[in-house]
Structures are given as structure tokens and as C-alpha cells.
Amino acid sequence: MFYLFLTTGIFFLDFLIKRLMDRRLKERTQHPCLGGRLILQKYHNRGAALNLFEQYPKFMRFLHTCAIAAAGSTLLHAIRTGKHPLHTVGLAMLFGGGANNLCDRYTKGHVVDYVRIGRGPGPLRRIVFNISDLFVCSGAFLAALTADFGQKKP
Image (cartoon, rainbow, N blue to C red; front, top):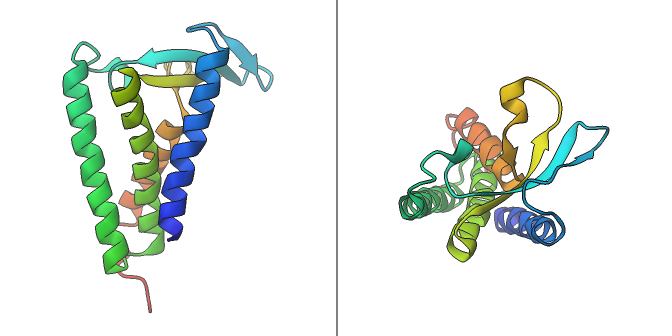
């Protein structure tokens, strides 16, 4: 039950933030915060990370749907077989964030991104992302890191 709450919490956290950003920010207008460390900037991403395949929105929606279906079935399998809790948490994070972005693709035709890093190397400062993206990346990393941890102990 914990994993369902985690996945749902991630989904709705970013759903509410995206809704707020979509209403309050004009696209590509920059709003520095935390002393310029972060910049709020609404951006409609029609492709994958860094706008990869943005000219193929139907393909991206199909690919994203397949990836989320795979992540969801892997999460369910991990829960049913009692995989290590850290592995299952990683899968839940990945699924919650990915499902939120997929919802954007189906309802809006694009993913709403809204934050950039304000300091650091140039390429890093150009990436606009959202909270779901952070959960997808950190969840995938955690799931991959703990994939060989085995079953949880009864």
C-alpha cells in the first residue's frame, strides 16, 4: 500500500505544481529564485529529454506509453514477489513521475517543464525540467542500483 501512496503522491504533487506554473507563468519568461540558483521558466516540451524527437509527437506518445506500461508491470511484479524495498521504491518513483508526464502528453500534447538550474556549466543551465523528471531519473537510478539486492527478508 505504501508504494501506491508514493506513486500517487508523486503524480499529484507535480500535477498541482504544473497546474500552478501553467496558470501563473508565461512561456519562456524567466523568474529567478533562491538567489538565482533556480529559475522558474515554463516550457512546453513535445519531445523526450532535450526535445529529442519533438517532430514526432505521436511516436513520442506511443514510446512513452510503452515505457510506462513496462515500468508499471515491473513495479507490480516487484511488489508481488517481495523485491527489496529500495528497489520497489525506485520503481514507484519512476512510475509516478513517468505517469504524470504521460498524462500531460495525452491531455495537452506536450509535457509542461518549469524549472532550470541557474548556476553551473552552460549545458546544464539550458535544461528545463519538472519534478516528475527528477523522480523518473532518481527512481531509475535507485532501481538499477538495487536490482541485485534480492528479495526482502520475511
